[in-house]
Image 1 (cartoon, each protein chain N blue to C red):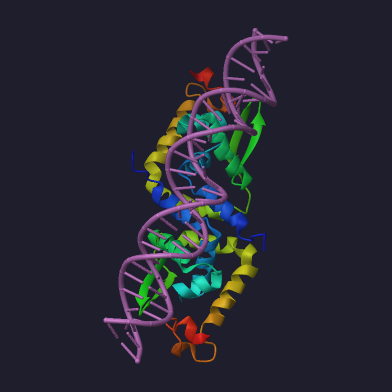
Image 2 (tube, each protein chain N blue to C red; image 1 turned 135 degrees about the horizontal axis):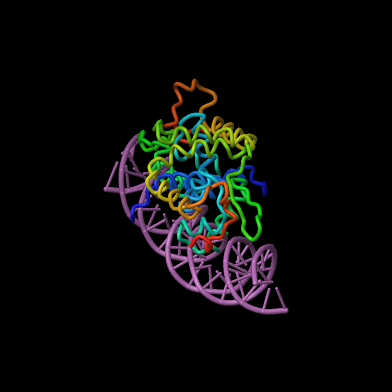
Length: 129
Length: 129
DNA sequence: AGGTCATTTCGCAATTTCCCGAAACATCGT
DNA sequence: ACGATGTTTCGGGAAATTGCGAAATGACCT
């Protein structure tokens, strides 16, 4: 009774119901990134992005792991949240302009002069500037 | 800039991200009801239910129409929200106990002595008591 | 050890959500 | 017209959400 069986689903939907977090998911749909890259692309304070990612991780939508002093983020492959995400992509078509701009900016942040294989996301932003 | 292309989707997800509204959708998945029946089943004030339904209607998830002094509610058949709802049902499996209890209570509110065909939702609750 | 960069935690103000009761509306029956 | 019933709108208080900067943490480098 006190434990609401709908709680997990509601929590997941609450996390999805935010434009910044949807943009993050769409970004990660195109490949993994590190936190500072996400912050740069979205133009938000790192602390803000970190908090959004905490929510996404808590509900199993993304996974994070440490690489040096960077934290990499990628879509989780948990089966639970898959169908929801799959249903979501088509519904984001109306924002394709904004989302592809995000993706382009993310790509621009990565090494664009060297082989991607030599330029993992562990490269610092400063090193690119 | 001021117009956020993700807004419609975010609004829909925000409306979905609430246990009461999910219970309402699950209830309507089994058939149309009128507002007072929903309020009775959920044990909430009619004004509260009315406000939840306003949100569900605004995002096109349900449709309402007037029958005498009652307002009937049913799932909308809009194509836009269909895939999202279809992805949602399986994820509500964990709450099947609560949801089927809701459905049973809704059925009990309807005429259980006469033929359902003779007992549309337009029958008042008092008339059943 | 000290310095720098990436990240998280914390405190806080602004905004929004949630639920209700009271009052306003609407519709039916007498 | 009146009262009863279903519904919505409004006012307000409690709680949750959002975003940031400042400070704390962790990891690298010299």
